[in-house]
Length: 399
Image (cartoon, rainbow, N blue to C red; front, side):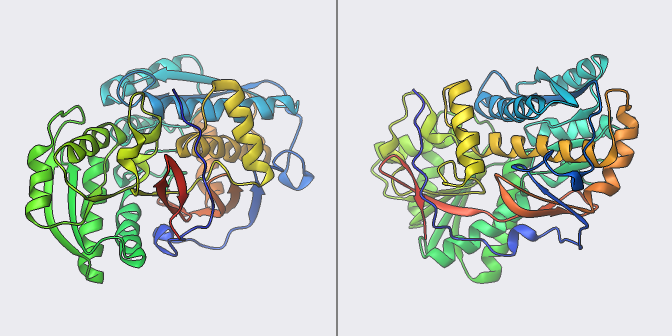
């Protein structure tokens, strides 16, 4: 049964690190709550329906993330369509997080007339799709594929999420600033770009700031059921905190096995940990005192957040995670582009792509997952994240 988080905002702001891609001055600014309501946005009552693609794991181990992305986009589309004028249709395909299936899904959506892709959800799948999209000149705005490989050498791929290297560096600095661990062990998936990239920058930043990493252990399958070797390595090194730059599925097993073996580690995760408390059958007491970074707080009291959360919960029966919020923001960013650049249902994917690339570098956006977000030519976004601790089965400020 889904658990509604009680997120209390008093953020540990990870200053500067999530601006690692840099930012230049920008000339156009909108936000999700006012997009479409101001003449300064260049809005027009263009007719027709623009087809927006989303690709992600709608089934399988990572379905929580893929569905969150698709649902976040759909909530935004429903709001935008209700305004009248230009309409949008979501084309959503399941790739189960697999690169080959993701390319097949991309081809299927292109055959249906996709004009822009808001995805894919996972980094490996997105990298495969991005190669094809770059050749075909289709613009990709991914809510959640955070590895640098997705946009490296590609001018048409932009991220709404913060990048893996910035997550790793920020995690190291946050652990030190909060004083939650002095001897850190790391368990990561060495067969996964997402996990490996975060691990590498975490270790680099830890060395730079004097945070001691006493043990490193790996695995190569998120379906791995036995983490006794990895946990024993952490225990042998007298680690007091285990950093987990991985998704929530193996984290469930790690926490359960650490408890069963009597280990008393603290745990620290990044955005892949979001969803842990929603896992059916998971004893949330096992996560008590664990930390994570996220740019989204579902229980902020501002109008934009409360409206999004209430609509999302009413429609899907669960509380939105940061993947849903990033996806919602992605749709509103594209909507602002449509207004500013005059896209219609007749605008080709290629023309949209070539117009979006320079426009993104002159645009500032405020939404659910950040204020005054900006982008540079490498597709990276500048935004900040917040550290939370799990307390009494929900998230609370770590500050």
